[in-house]
Image (cartoon, rainbow, N blue to C red; front, side):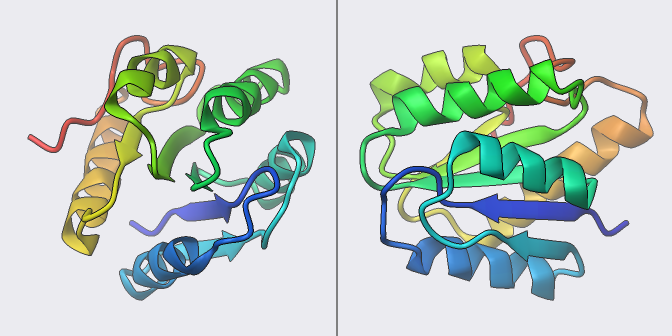
Length: 149
């Protein structure tokens, strides 16, 4: 089943090669992908997710602002009632920061060296959870986080 996926670059980070590679790989895997472009505010990103009726939101950060921006976006999604949206992130995200991001509602963090096969496995896991009626989104997933196992 194809999903609608928004890929976004929040904040002032101007490096988007990785985000474009992920967007293209997800598109090539049969998903509908919307790339927002560079330097988007959390509010702009959430508006795009809502306007596009997205199933997943992928966030990319290389600037170090992930600790503020990613949780803010999750909070705005919850406030907008978009609890079912699955949020994942990638970029340069220290291991020590990841638990806080999971606690905010994110479901996966992908670092350098992540393969497109791993991204595909994550999407398959999200689809399986949804098909089984299991919670997976930013506001409904409880402690679920994708571990790749």
